[in-house]
Length: 256
Image 1 (cartoon, rainbow, N blue to C red):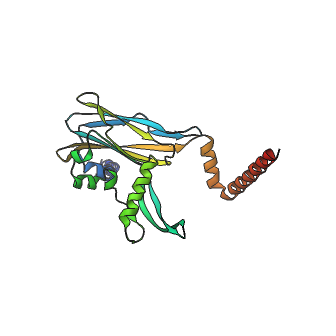
Image 2 (spheres, one colour):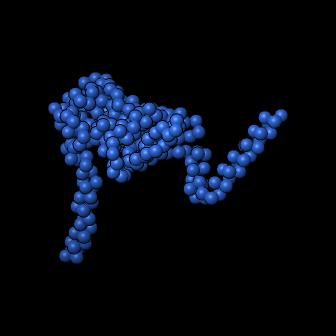
Image 3 (cartoon, rainbow, N blue to C red):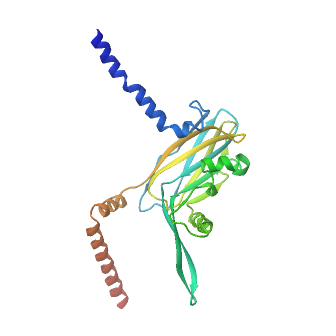
């Protein structure tokens, strides 16, 4: 009997450890809201398939709340490095003279809310949660003068390309149900995205949820991409041959 009891204890031992690991994995979210937070959300799709005919798409985020408050939706794309170059006039010609690289820049960033962010939360809370493009924390690769100008250029270029956006796009369909449409341009990057939804009241996060979103290439584009990674030399050689063939064919047609 003692041996069976010992075996049972050994089988049950990993359970608390698994629960602890699960709690640690969800620690950032649990720090924002209790486990029984009155907020339920989901996406209309969790996968965006990029094909040759992909010109952008829109996803629907919907949810329900049990307590009053403002809803803020934040969608973040995979982070990477971005280089900003500054041009100066040299002998009447504009040339790239200086540059600055930022690390930890989200490839995509969208914020949708029920009201303007400054009316929902204080700057301290927005900065802590990195809600709003101005609250994003970019890391400059090197110390250089006027980093704010380069940072402003990053935000401006991202906004012009449709990769960064802020709008009052959360609409309540009743006292509890809400929805928000999220737009993705054709230049959206491949990777794992995260849709965060916050229920905020009196400058305090009442509840929060995070939902994964995946952007991936499908079909022929995915096969070509995978082959270029497996055989980069062969892929480059084929690309050069196709370029030469296309140039020769164009020259032949225009000659006639």
